[in-house]
Length: 296
Image 1 (tube, one colour):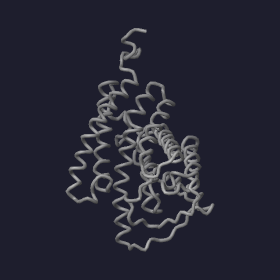
Image 2: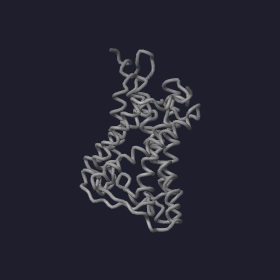
Image 3: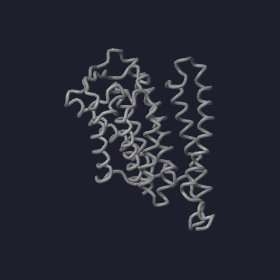
Image 4: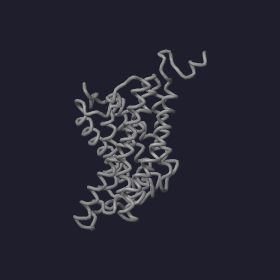
């Protein structure tokens, strides 16, 4: 082994581990800067729209999506000689179909998890009496926020990071690494637990399998966004421990426990009902004919 082979592969290009390092360094710098911009843009609106608020999360999500895609494009182009379309985020043939299919499956998977918890007496629901105006406002605002946040996370974790290892025939490593990162980031959320960390890791695998099925980000983004939106805005359940984003959901949830079934104060993602639903949905994506690769 020569010194240069530590950095470059047989094709003369930088090895995937170093490409991951370059992307990560650029994204961290850009992320800190852009989060500051998001804060500056939203803070004049008032305390309730600062960090953690709907306004901040929406603007920050848009900026993080743009950063992940642009830096991913830069790395793909300069380090691997690839075009923007390699990221799977272009509007090629089939993108809308994959997005819609992902949204439907995301809603179905979330509904399955809730049905499991409900069947064992863990949760019950009642229509919210907050009024139509407040509910519609929550539905619309939360959709925008969850769409921006979900797109950002998919562009980051299933975008260039995942894909550059996958191109080096390190697909299993890519799945494990990005799922670990995805779960660890969410572990800072309120009321997180070992169980919620495990389910979030499993969700990372769910999204990775969705990417592998279509080789685009649209299918995984549909899954991600609809899971979060249905969970919070429709069923009134904490989304990864967060409830502030859904002040007036369509339904009000009563959690009777036990926490190992329903997730307790973290929400459905902290319980075994979520585990079962994610395992079934992942198997469906992998084994059942469904969405096709965009552009095919």
